[in-house]
Each structure stands twice: as C-alpha cells, then as structure tokens.
Length: 371
Ligand SMILES: Cc1cc2nc3c(=O)[nH]c(=O)nc-3n(C[C@H](O)[C@H](O)[C@H](O)COP(=O)(O)OP(=O)(O)OC[C@H]3O[C@@H](n4cnc5c(N)ncnc54)[C@H](O)[C@@H]3O)c2cc1C
Image 1 (tube, rainbow, N blue to C red):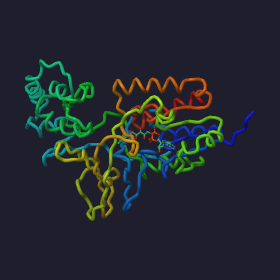
Image 2: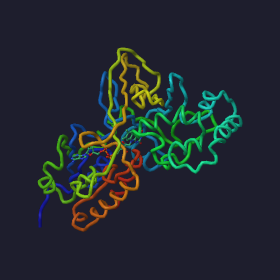
Image 3: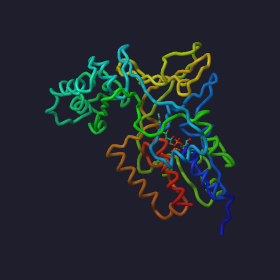
Image 4: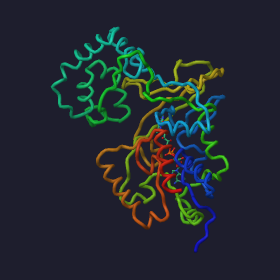
C-alpha cells in the first residue's frame, strides 16, 4: 500500500482552500497547500501600499446573515463597522445606491415614499406593455427611463462589454427599490472588514499549515499528486481536465492603482461611474474601508474586459451554453477514477459566483462530509 507524506494536498490558497486546510489540520490531518500566486488568500488578498490595505483583486466587503459563518470567522478576526454605501457618479452628479429614498430625491426631488412610488409608476407607464426580451427592455419595464439611463445602462454595458439590447433580460430579475433613506448596500445582518485587513483572516486560518506559494499544480501534477492521499482542487474545473470538452467563459477585470499625495480623494470607498464614456466602472479608495487616517491615499480604477488565458477569471458567465459545459465537466469529475483521489470546491471549480460567506459555508460543508 502506498504511503503518503500528507493526507491532503490543497491546490489553491484562497478562502475555500484556507478553511478546508484549517479544519483538516485541526482534526490531525497532515496538509500541504500550494498556490501558483506568490501570496496566500486568493482574491481576498490585500497588498500593503503606503500603509493602506489595498484590495488587489477588487473591493471585498464581508457580509452575511449566516450565524454559523459569522461565528466561524470571528474566531479568527474581529470586524470593523464598515457599511458598504456606494455612490454613483453620472456626468458629475452624485446619487446614492442602492436605489432608495435618497436616490429618488436626487433624481426627481420627491421627498416621501408615496411621491417616489407615484413617480416610478409614471416612469414605467410607457413600458408596461413590454414583454422584455433583453436587459434594456427589462430595466425600462421595471424602473422606467430616468433610472435606466442614469444608473443602469452605461454601467451594465461596460460590465458586459456589449449593448444592453444584447444582454439577456434575466440578468436583472427585479430592481431592489427601498422606500427608506437607507444607503446600506446589503440587507445582511452582519457586515464589515476584518480589523487588520483580509490577510489577518487568511494568516490566522493558515497558522500551523504548510503552504508553498509560487507552485503551479499543473507544472508538476504527477509528483504533487504522489505526495498526498487525497487532493482538494480549487482551481478552474475546465483546466483540471485540460479543457478537453471546451473552455468555460468568464468576464475579466484589470485594475489601475495609484498612490496620491493627498489625504482624501473621493470621500468614499466605492464610487461607481455609470456613464458609458468613462472607461472604468468604479474607483475604489481603499483607506475608507478601514477608516484610515494615513497622509496619503491609494485609489484603484476598475476596468472590465474580455477573458483570455493570460488574465484572471473573475466572473463566470452562467448562461445556458456554459452551464451545459459545466454539467459535462461535473459528470467527468464524478467518475470513480477521479472521485477516489480528488475533491473539487471553491468558485473556480464550481464555476459559480460565491460571496465570501458562501465560500466559507461550502468549505465547511465539504469539511463535514470529508472529515
Ligand atoms: C471582483 C470581485 C469582487 C468581490 N467582492 C466580494 C465582496 O465584496 N464580498 C464577498 O463576500 N465576496 C466578494 N467576492 C467573492 C470572493 O472573492 C470569493 O468568494 C472568494 O475569493 C472565493 O475563494 P476561492 O478560494 O473559492 O477562490 P480564489 O480566491 O480564486 O482562490 C483560488 C486560488 O487557487 C489558485 N490556483 C488556481 N489554479 C491553480 C493551480 N493550477 N495551481 C496552484 N494554484 C492555483 C489561485 O491562484 C487562487 O489563489 C468578489 C469576487 C470578485 C471577483
């Protein structure tokens, strides 16, 4: 019988791999974690620049209503009182998000919920007969022209890289109108940023776990597989099978980050730019996630673009074509020859958008089944 140096090899030091590695180590398993990047944490990793935690792979705000997940993360870190309240900038004028009484006041000068509801009905009236066939029609049907043109059209077209008339209607199922003066983007019970930043969370999860960064699994797969009895793979599912059935599609992003010699640039962590002619979708000012008082500030402009093998896969495109392909890969992964050795999990192996709390919930569920 083969003897292994480790019980588990975990491919990917992101949040999913970190939770699994922590729990497996806790139960006495010998675990080795590898990641092809030069750091741990996956997409929640923060880089320190000018004393500020910079969200290197996009803005991350922890929010959950899942008590088990909240208690779990609080074993490792405490959270600050950050509440996500993004602002939209359309042609220099500012609007609060999500759509709430402040937004309706800024759009139309209405001051009461009844006035706001009446205005929305008036705006929707010309489009009420529509049977929406694309995102533009859906947004007009649900919210009318002003809201669509000011806050939805340009932003969504930049995100998807095509006209709203060519984006499927199901992307917007409903518009979350709030008839209160509440700018909190999320409805969850708990929210915040870990005190000390996200690296404090991942470092605590990896405490006492052997981690090797800068190691690409596929460059040495057979040898790495030989080290452990079982392998948890959290990379892209299609890549695991050498993309032999085809490639799953993603939207990608690129980020331009700069240090500014001033204390405060935009007064908010997240400002969305909703007009088409501004090429980025948003500007992050990272210090505001942690109420920073540093002398300098760091801002990041976020540009959506096409995915290719040379850039990061950010958002899965879960349309029918990709979902069918995913089912085929899942069927392969379920074959006994793979099941004996491999476990799959995380946003890339599941080809699913997971918030951090979903990621932790899924990793804990796998842990319970496996350990
Ligand atoms: C732009 C953006 C913003 C987000 N904002 C929020 C937010 O505000 N709130 C929230 O709750 N969630 C947010 N999320 C979701 C959050 O990022 C995920 O829930 C979480 O990072 C998923 O963790 P993971 O371990 O599954 O994946 P990842 O973090 O992607 O980790 C996978 C790791 O596997 C490694 N890997 C892949 N292939 C290989 C290989 N061949 N060899 C070695 N290593 C490999 C990768 O390098 C990576 O480090 C956001 C996501 C994105 C894309």
